[in-house]
Image (cartoon, rainbow, N blue to C red; front, side):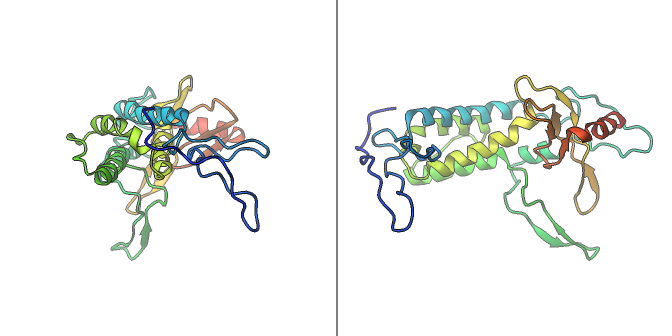
Length: 256
């Protein structure tokens, strides 16, 4: 880190009236509370994080950028078998709806509720896919506004990530660094199952059907064999298959 702007307060925990001691004012905001009897991890002088956490924030930002570059909504783009389904089974959508939503600038955190022409009330998922570009742009807009800067010149994930990387020294001096890092964590968690984990074997695409209101579609997000545990999970639609359901899942994947 660069030279600190100001000395952080000493690690002297205050005592609440009816609870354990409050965390020290100079704690690292990105570290979890320590186990009982252990000291809090402190931030570097003048910062709200320690140097290690700054490095991890930078790594997460780079991971979002790199995983975005390999996103591909085309069926079979990640190596799964393509082709039409067997007779009696519904056809696949022409592309992964989830990946398309992640790549769409218009995707929003807000879940809409509306009354359709058929008289039915339709609701969007309360955990909608996040637009990577929109989320990074929102972070950059907040930083640029707070610092009275122009912001990134090019509206692209690579350029915004590069610009934000140049602002990390300032960002890690702010109390809002926790919210900034939380967005990056959400994007990384969303992108990892779509782009694969190192060493994880791809087993196919999620056959779970989703009700879009007008019709039902297959999720189509990539599925990977678990590196730990015995549950195959789809981060896109949150469907899980435990080991006793793997045979059923295998038949669904084979049929598709």
